[in-house]
Image (tube, rainbow, N blue to C red; front, side):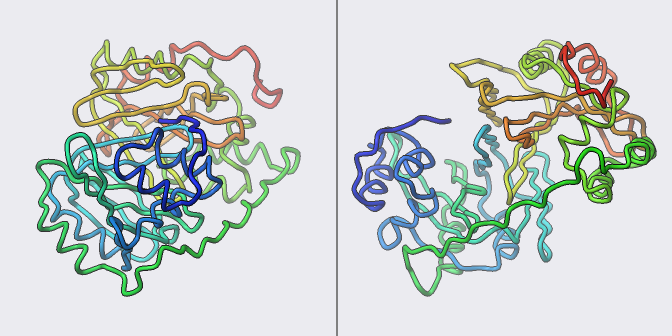
Length: 358
């Protein structure tokens, strides 16, 4: 969630003590922003008190998370928060990539972006709350893992003992990411080849390679490829899809990610509720909080595969960055659920499109 707290703290440590005691008015991310520091720096201020700095091959640590039993995990970006409860299982982490393929906890991990890790203990109205929190090189939160009443506390303590950093410093050596490469200008993209190769896709995972080949970014490709494969929808499309999925018992997949992690929900959803600018899914094992006022564009996208067309709903901010994606649940090797496809195809189109898409 997002608020804009007034700055009343003189130091990060002062803010952290208030926050970790449960007396701060606001969330860590927002308090840090108001203080002109990163969330990672705010959490690190507690090192030596209720924060322990970790040091590990992050892929190795991730492969041991199944020992914790049931946990609550959170992955977020500036516009959406994705929360799941479940077990770490079916874990693979080699080199720069990590994958967790349990249905309850389904993650794609980009481990070169993982820079800092902490074991954190904070206070709540229900008692102590223990977590593992990971941040990227810029100090932005990548992924958080919270113990629940059903978690194994001994396993948590064993992980901390094994991966406690020798130097418990509160100082973070932050680095800015290089600016993303600039895609080719519209006029320099071979539109005929882009459309032809798009039509020849056999797997949705080939799509990233297609964009790289043509030096074309995601949003740009949707604008240029034409209505056969991408159509701009009205801003209410997300709300319509969530409410219709509940009403018609359509099982969906919801992707939210950042530079270091993509978190996925698969299954039915039960309760959709609007609260101010947020639209929320409030289910026992899955919560989504998404800022509708941050939605600049929503696109219906069709990708051919050997199993038929796969239809996705892709959500962009005002910087033309994708921050959430929805699709219908589908078993590998099976065609897309026609109920999902029909629902998506029935959504209202935006009245204006680029000339290239007409």
